[in-house]
Amino acid sequence: MFRSLLASLLTLRGLIILIGLVALALVIWIVGPLVSLGDFAPLQSETNRITLIVGLFVVLAATTFVRHWLAWRANRRMIAS
Image 1 (spheres, one colour):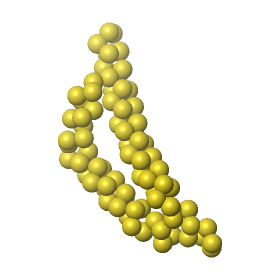
Image 2 (cartoon, one colour):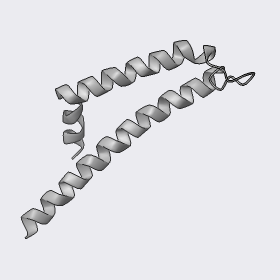
Image 3 (tube, one colour):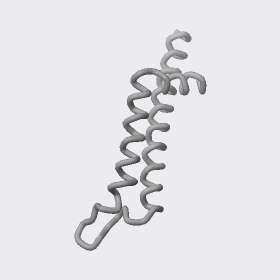
């Protein structure tokens, strides 16, 4: 199952998603300090930007894992029936 998770990142769809996420992370890192709402600048500190970027990658990993787990479970049910 872990091998199929890694293989899914090597497909064209997976690579496009990964490249898009890296591009979004760069935008957050570079433009983040410039974003402010009045006097409140939520992405001013490096810690907040790192937390947001890591959170995006965690969401990608969790989504990929859940998709593969659901497919694995459906496959097992089909084999059992």
